[in-house]
Amino acid sequence: MPDAAANQALASAVSEVLETMFFACVYAETAASEEGGRLEARLRFSGGRQGEFRLGISADAARSIAAGFLGVEESEVGAVQVGDVVCEVANMICGSVLSHVGADLAYDLHPPRLVEPGEAAATPPFRVRSFDLGNGTLTAGIRFEPS
Amino acid sequence: MAFHVLIADDSPGMRLVIRRVIELSGFAVDLFVDAADGEQALCALRRQPVDVVLTDINMPVMNGEQFIVALRADEKLKTLPVVVVSTDATRHRIERMLELGAQGYITKPFQPEALREELERVLGVPHA
Image (cartoon, rainbow over all chains, first blue to last red; front, side):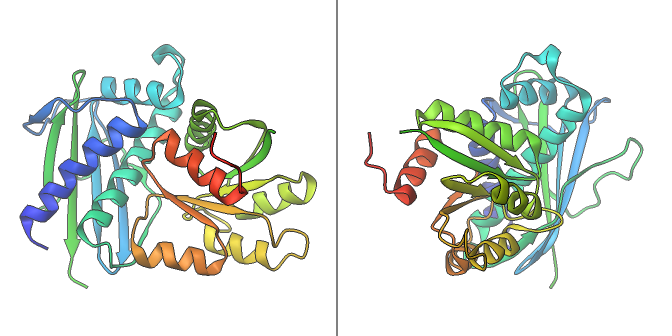
């Protein structure tokens, strides 16, 4: 998998998914954020390609996206709903990336899960891109493993 | 004419969003039925007839493939139109789901108009 193709697919998928389904804007690419209070979702994929996808997002941005997705005020969104929506964002972006990089290959997405605080950080070699959402950052990373 | 629509997806948020998107699109629905997996959907369909089913693929208990196979094996439900709503846009998956008996396939993310057009197509409704 060429780096350029995976990097381009990550950027395209993040914009497409957030703007179409989550009513969020991607302002610009930014440096990866390590601030506290972030939520992280992970999911594995297998089949024609196998590996792992990880998505980290600022708590404020996650709440805003959840509210937009569910069509309610931010104050009405509970922590469980925010977590569900972060997992759904990860699911859609990962599916979109895999479709961009290999439309001819079948794959299975495993259920996304939220990472517990303190769980190990991303292990290289993840290809990672981070984006400014206006009220926080979103970082998406993917790792392809040998079949 | 308004339709009855069943939405099978393990994400409550996604079910809500699909419902909202259908409403935003102007497609007339007077009853939504929710199910968190294929098994729940089958039970619901035996109690409450609908005009069309929207189903995810990756679901626990009974996934979208198993659900469509079960629908097509059920004498009373085998002709019910099914549209798959999935993140998976690979050719292999789309062909597989259509071979199993889905009439439509739409990939997430999607625009309201795209979902409406797919519903109208599988139901044979003239485009408004």
